[in-house]
Length: 328
Ligand code: PBG
Image (cartoon, rainbow, N blue to C red; front, side, top):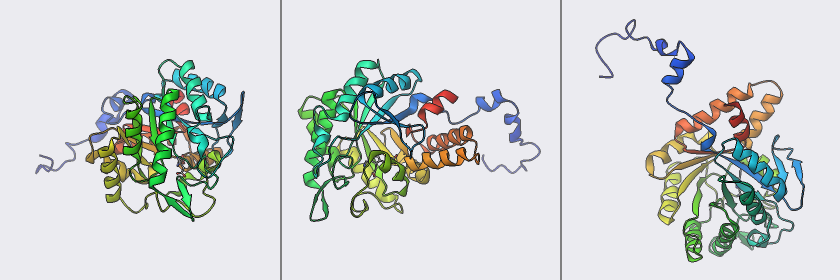
């Protein structure tokens, strides 16, 4: 049927369906609105703090009270939710502020939950912002240890749930952490709290601006011993399968744009919702080029987010969320 004997032109004229805005909209295959987006927030200690983040123009370091205000604005824009990253008062080798009851993220979760009606509050679960060495796990003799890290991540996730998070998002890439987090949540009667797993997270240069914003760059070495090799896609499917088996409710691919093929492969492989993280480096490049007048920011953002959606992402985490919501 696709390959009929008839020569296509002049019978076939695809341009017919491109002639007016209504026609184009009628046959559009991919739609994206703010209800599919999650906006990252960086929370810091203190009160009344709203400090621009130089590596992420348009984003701020926010104290809990300011984060609540920001979250209210995000909710009013129709955006699905926020994901919180914390910059603690003090770092130590085990990252113990990560699970403190009055930690920055825990305070911000409570403030946002009391300010917003139904905005989804997600939290990033990873130690790198809290550890003095900047790695995502426990370090001993220069090695990032897998199994001893699991208990700390589980504690962190439980403390976020206790503060009122709807969804926790482990981003550390330790083996077995989804199962450990699920088990710990269930044991504390948080069985309704969802897990958004950073399932296929690559060791990417695109995290640069985030590490400046979150003060989370590793103090020695890099993350290639736990994050994935950018060259691999079969391995992504394995990571995703394991996380689903361990109890992930949503699986994420990160970064997004350089990994659209991975998003597509994951979409085809699992029956869970798929998320993609349009990361800091992807955002910063657009901002930098737009500032110089080299690209049309609105069109670039729309095209970019649509492409991530078209590849198969149901959910997109992006720093563009507020702008996108205002523009559409
Ligand atoms: C924590 C974490 C990182 C990001 C999200 N969670 C940084 C990293 O792995 O080094 C990156 C997000 C971004 O670049 O926007 N592990």
